[in-house]
Image 1: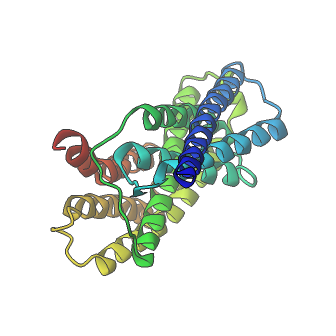
Image 2 (image 1 turned 30 degrees about the horizontal axis):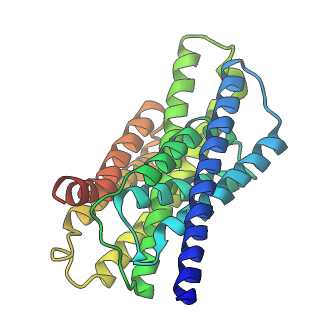
Image 3 (image 1 turned 180 degrees about the vertical axis):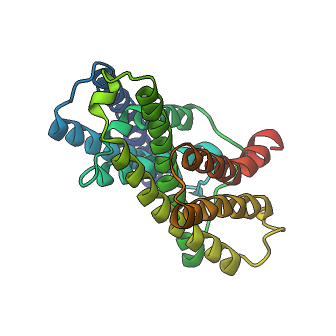
Length: 280
């Protein structure tokens, strides 16, 4: 009897830690996003060391929350909202690590509030996904590569949106406010293609492991995901070819980036949304 009481108390403590760390990460993400966003709108720079310290603190708390969210007593829970929170965590981690050597911390103003929304949904909403009791190492590698590919290409998409906004401000000759805190247009564009190259390589590895490691794609409800992932890969590959051979840049690069991301979003979330929230 005492064993079960101890086990129940431990589970309650784990849930409490997961819940409280999620709430703390949510609030910290919102605070960072508001601080960074308001400073950018005023054309001011924030205290960068403090910003990064707070960002890594929020990511650590978010990681604790995600660990408890995914690794449950019933098995590995890869439901719609749990995976959404996990992807946001990977995006934030990749972005924060990248900001140590690249001037991309201004993207915190958009990514972090969205991540707080992902945490809020993961705390309060649940889909019809049944937790997996066993995931092989090969499938684990495929999932890891897929998450990294999606995360890097999401950051590239946000970078493309920021680039489009910067280009618009320059065309309107509005040189104050936000434009003063963004890197030069050429730097922003170079960062975009650096992320696109990295994301496309990861997406290529994700597709290869998917085709090699899954026995029956149709039976495992993965045909939709693989089709849209391949479509996204084609969009990114054409863009990178156009950049290398034809010098594509500016609006054309932005449009292709956004098109590839739409296909990727349908691949990762489209089938899960239909299977777990509509057909469940």
